[in-house]
Image (cartoon, rainbow, N blue to C red):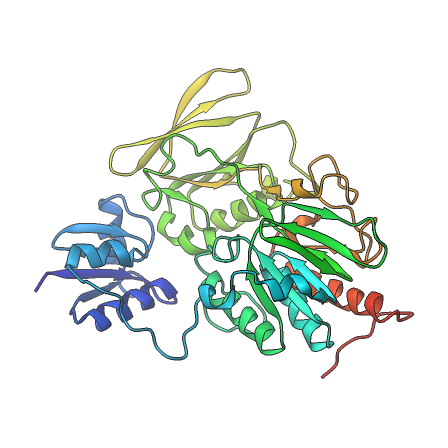
Length: 414
């Protein structure tokens, strides 16, 4: 039997998944919980690892939840049977059929993230014939979020994928249809029926919710992928404790970067905020950061490369005077601006701002009657799953008002 050591932390959902995998595969393991025993924290630090789970199989390290790679290392063949109650996104989202193109839907949401899924729950419950279209339901911002511990009504910690699947189950149970496809273009010229062009055909709808979310820049910083989990992180909630009394950098110019810098300041000895330009984006403010003795802000500083051997130990930074200098740090948290709403397919169908965000009023109505937008497709003060879900509720109730020609929106109380 191979020697398996699992470094876990309390409340880590992926650690629990990994333990279940080993049980199903028939392997025993030694668990080392870094929350309960600080020595195990030090063990990972000495090897340049700053996240959980970490699994050692006969001395080979697997950082993060990597079941397929571990199956290969352990010689596990074939798929493990899934528990009956478990459902995957593959089962929620079907390929579009001719019957779907023959329908006229009351409400179609473009995007199946927290905004689109929440909208589908409310719309289906209002007896609107509802359809979700999503080209990659397992790849959205929420779906790839490592841990969520602050979603109302969901105690403990869950992965973003687990939370999203709960939403999809709820929408499905109320009657929502879900398909996997890509909206190529839209035609909102008809006052009554909106048309959405897919590669497979044309979807017809009385009302539409644009909930496509935002996408990150395609290119990564040199060294980013190599050192992910070894000093490169994207979530202070997940990994801040690993940097207690250490020096970390935060790179970004958004409200999220400010929020994460504040969170890290409670753990790290020193936090260096690199802002690529001379100002923050949107309504983000650094006023509170200026009150923190262990936070320094560097304007017009760009991260060029992440350096290290087995772990991050430095950053190559281009400063405000265009000089390239190396900073010694123990880790870097990346919240780079560049998340761009995926709204290019709309072209001029609805009004958008200079960055592509759809312009909406207080009830998320766009410049076209019967078309709504929310979540990361509109400009929000901060990006949070609960805000996107609330947008979905508002859009669905607005669609119900539009389709049924009500004078005002009708709330759902029970």
